[in-house]
Amino acid sequence: METPRHTDSVLVGASPEALYDLVSDVTRTGEWSPICRECWWRDEKRGVGAWFHGRNEADGASWQTESKVITAERGREFAWLVGGRFVRWGYTLEPEAQGTRLTESWEFRPTGIEMFHDKYGDAAPERIELRTRQARAGIPAALTAIKRIAEAEARTSS
Image (cartoon, rainbow, N blue to C red):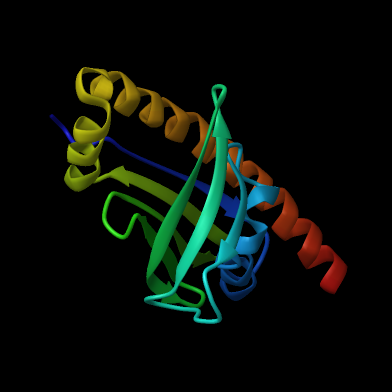
């Protein structure tokens, strides 16, 4: 089976550092994610190696996740692994003349596909396809919301 993944980008009228500060504050994820309703840090640790929890809702289901930060480079990239190894989510930031190109990426890793097969058995392909559809729809929606929030905050702070 091919590894499901999706990536999309948007140009945001904010600096890479300001945008990084926004997307790396996982406690704000519920402001832009169409599925993740809230996130909270496990403890006081931040940066690479820190863990956070998320509460998700979609298609009549709700579930919680625990994720490990794997990349935390202010102004450049913030990424995490759900379950520490199953699904990779991340944001990369590239400065442009008009602001920052923000790219969100999602990859359902082979370990996650294996876990879904163990957990859901014969229903795993359907569940994997559902998560893939959710990511493909959710990433552009999240990027649009992040752009709106970041640009409003940039106007307020200037």
